[in-house]
Image (tube, rainbow, N blue to C red; front, side, top):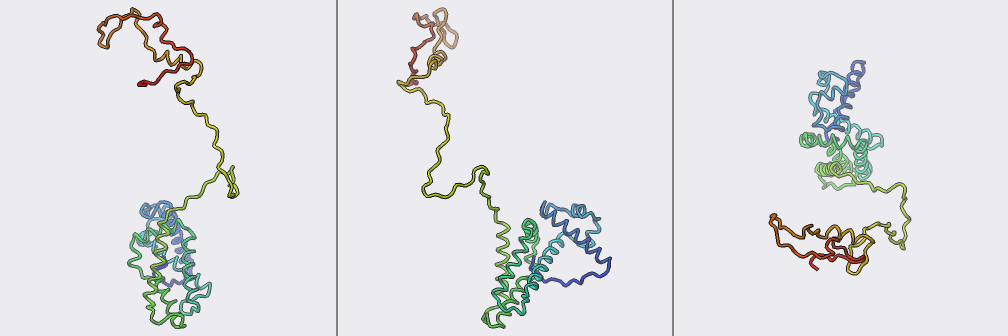
Length: 282
């Protein structure tokens, strides 16, 4: 994070120093890729060395522990912030337009975070869980305080303003915005079929006609004429079939007294065409 004082590191001069720097950068880039893909807690040192194609001992020659990779990530962000301000000629001690300087500082921090949003979200989450916001020196707060003190010297800001406190408040605004951005859910894109472009807006547009549906016919009502053969098939299925000998039996199998069978009983209760079987209980 851009929140601790940066150490001034001299550029390596010899071939050996340049090779060390290349190996360190390779380990660092491999670690960030794995943190983005798998998460910080799910990535081990062995996986980082495998991805960077270096020995395990080489890793500890450059980083004493895995948390040092997060510290290096914060150092790189601070370096980008300083370079961005220097490129636009905005030194904190000689700023002329305090509002423009503070606004530009926030814009540079936002641009750094948006260079690789997935990586920023993954490493920032690890940065918070590791407790870096608590034990790191507030580098951004110091930079904001320098801007405010320069504005006080120029007479743009009242002398009654507590510059360190105001710088800390601005830092809290920056970090709070960054935290909310990390936790915000992704917006769902509006899907629209490619074959049906959106219709032009119209105040008199009417609802489209509903597509034709093949709904089943309504149930047979009293007085309605069913389809040919429907009533006959239904009556055949539900009509009782009399016993051949004219007798009947109860569920227990005991014989019951015979009853008279009408001559039309063997026709399975056929009904004239057009008749509708009434519902039970009517």
